Length: 375
Image (tube, rainbow, N blue to C red; front, side):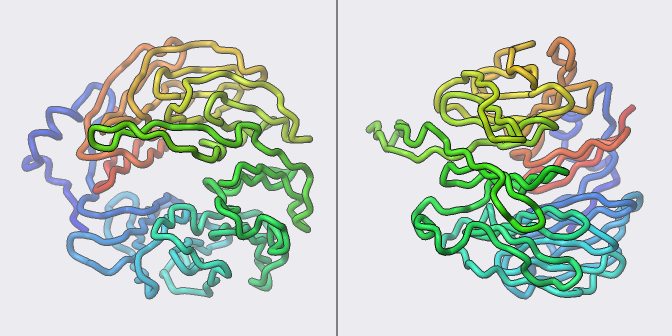
């Protein structure tokens, strides 16, 4: 890992494309191939695949103010997966490609680890190791199932689906899309095979099931000078949890399900076969479909605002005042009330994630983590 804090020698592209009237660049953690990260208290936790000075995949804890290393945990099982990093009662939980690791947050000592019962059969492990937690269970997704792990015994309380279901070994599998979603009513799971469930947390019993209606669609691809058409299965895209709804998209619509019963509450048509990103906050849905950026009313799906935006969006989020849209190596910041653009910043590579904390802005790209202060 290399840390740049002396901005007299930063490449000209940073000065030309990041300098603006709203945010001041404070630090860059660079040369670090980040697979997942999070901030808890006074510490940044970064999991990586490799770095400029250390080829061994590891998770590192950095002081939030000084960015000095507190501790480092090396993986023994190859590359780090893209499991999210969460914490509970002084413990840090992170999923790699084979194991969920549980570390002491203060010193990085491993307390225990959990090996996934279903090993991934593909080179692509982007969905493996996603997890969420409450006061009783850790809910962990591997390649084909989601497990509720008792936090007192570290044993599996229940698993879903059962290996006895008829389509358990039918592709696409029960691979969880995104992080398992949790609230006081239950657990919500969106699988690659187009099935969406709400489960009771204590026993894993189904509360409801929703089967996506748009089972198959056709997509055109350019292969050299030829255009090929292939049939694809539809999976829930960009699923998010609202206080009243589970919201996701298929190939043609953004769909909203009532969390109590799984019934379809509303549908909003989008650009067919577009690249979809959805984010919810309070009673608003922020949406990009590769054609426009929209703000919808979360209760009925009615459109409030729309502006053209034809680039593929990597993320979309808001701090309540502004709307942040990352696409094509650029961060565009809009006034949330009228979608007028405030500023645009260009980065070194594709942006993967954003974190907004009070007056600080964190931007993760493929290679670096940028830290800004609000002026």
